[in-house]
Length: 368
Image (cartoon, rainbow, N blue to C red; front, top):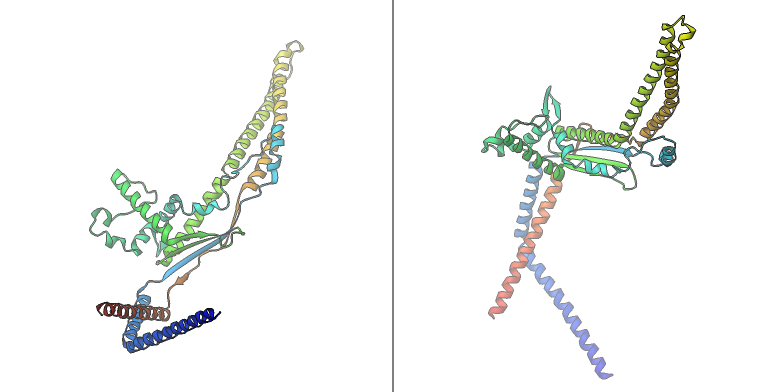
């Protein structure tokens, strides 16, 4: 029992010594750092100056935003009757099916084809049509970087992006590939603000306000049109085929009716013993007309059902917000930059002083 009490007493004394040493060390370090206040202040002022210079020299970034609601169409509807309809010879079509789900449209925005077509679109400025790719090259100062390269210095793109020589084509395609990667990485953001909703948000950030707005508009228009066209391609083809068949049957039926009438007109006072001249052609034309008369209603029914299916398969894309000048500006305030710069270099100076003092103490102890 006595030994346990002594152990507890010794442990208490050790804790008190440790706490006291910690407080003394803290006071010693605080005194040392206060003695170097002029260095810490100098670093802080330097950091504040750097922060102010950074905020003043950094070009503002403009953000063009488009938000739209995407409704991919009803998945039920006539689809549940497709099997029954096919048993009676009616094809109501399947549309695009699951070729593109709603989320896949966001991947289309990042594809090279869509970005390239948008970059090769003209933007009107002061009455001149300039391709967006040329504007991108201009505000990024690429021609200055290429001044020592004769092939790149005066490079120019065409809307079709087709060039005579293989070397020239390769050069243009290589530059376009680099630009597309840069836009995907640093300029373009496509996301759903809320995973539960069908709202898609497309942001384009650039140092050139007109480029950000024009590129956003071109990209949204091209991707959405491509999405709708591809989603409804199968249904559109089905409607076109049925329309041609219905028109063809109607034309044949009408022709047979007129043919029978012409035969009667050609034999007004027919000899009763020469019925072959009228009966056979008339009956043949009537049979053709009757057959086509039976086929035509089914084709028309099939055609109308396919049109309904096309309507249901067509996705609805409704733009909610689109970019309007002036665009939102993303720029750090000078006051904020001064405070952050001063704090960072002030803390850095404290770390340097602490490290220097610690190393000196270690070297002194080793020498002793």
